[in-house]
Image 1 (cartoon, rainbow, N blue to C red):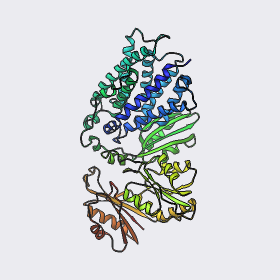
Image 2: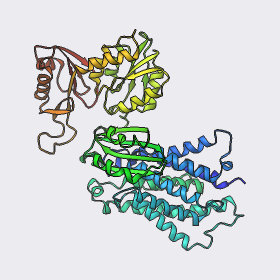
Image 3: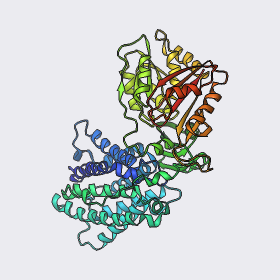
Image 4: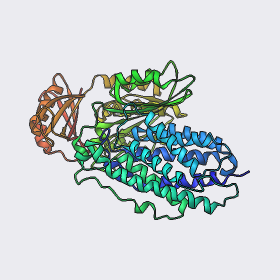
Length: 556
């Protein structure tokens, strides 16, 4: 018999997605805990969107949503949320979805009535707390727990907490809507109290972003049940202080927010947690004995994934450079755009796909015949965007240049998925990528080009000068001062000219050719830059227009 509860469920998920998407950036800007990486709204939205996509995929064979069956749906959405989760907030939200789904699945044939909703919310709260080794009050954990408690209290005082079999749709929606209205109300109060429970929030002048996201989700659910599309709009807005209070805080002791899933048999979350905790922090391992979702902040993402290699298949890998995310959070919309500009015509059998951060650098790669992917300020395109670029390139074989350590794993995944013959040359900077691109032989194949281009990169040293994103904890420099790097090592700081001279001298020792790519806000003229370069090396000055870096430098 068709189940109208399932039709309602699809409508609820869609409405919750819409409400969350409407305030996604607002939620991002509030994100200071556990790290100030500004992606809570993104991660929660992606998790919910994965649930909605799973529901829609289930109807692709022509079955109506109310003909599929509750058990099949709840298991599918729990798995979709788990695999779609990213970041702390996304993983915790996936466990809330799992808890809700498991309780609904445990009551086959029972209408989704107030009694069942209260029970499901309590199970969701328990699942959320169990997913975190050290639960912190003042976060989305507190919000879902207080929502579950309030709904249970309301149900305890209801005369009609269990629906009769002959109840009509309108009456069901009205009753459930009343419960969720109460949930939104208590959730808003919980969010408003979050700075009193978590000192970092109070110091930053914000409420908890994940908790706020939970209330926004509940308001979307209320809109679907009540038919009142204005319900999400009545939830109080919470805006981060001007200038971004969260930017004062370091993103993490570790660089990479590492997310992946593992599929296998007899998997145990407890078995893997200690090894992950030795490699980083913010460790979350959730799922069941066949699928685990892992989240960890670490400097060694490959080591984290290697812990699972003997036990199952590592899939759905995604890395985010949290340091870069913090540096860019005041420039909303500066993340990877994913725009692909394909080469106009093939130069030969083998071509290049390169990830770039600015139009000037994109032009340098296009002059060499490359297809480019706009990775934005943080050089962080998705696997799907890289795959689209490989497919768009006119050549039959491709060398993929990630041009950032943060993109290498996504690049490797993209070449696994494409039908073309493709290889990754793991360049970690755009200036190294240009040196690799010059070494391409278009008439050769991808395998041979990968070898020769890797050899070319091996003899290139790279560095750069940028404005400091924050004051140095050791007092060496202030925010806005010049900081100079050789590869990943800080070697100089202070005035732009002095810092650039040090980087030039260290990179130029023994070099015959140096390339310097000027950024959009470089504070020295080209003549001033030329005057600082070591006289023994030929200097090539290029205009890259890149954000964040005043100068990107390579030496051969």
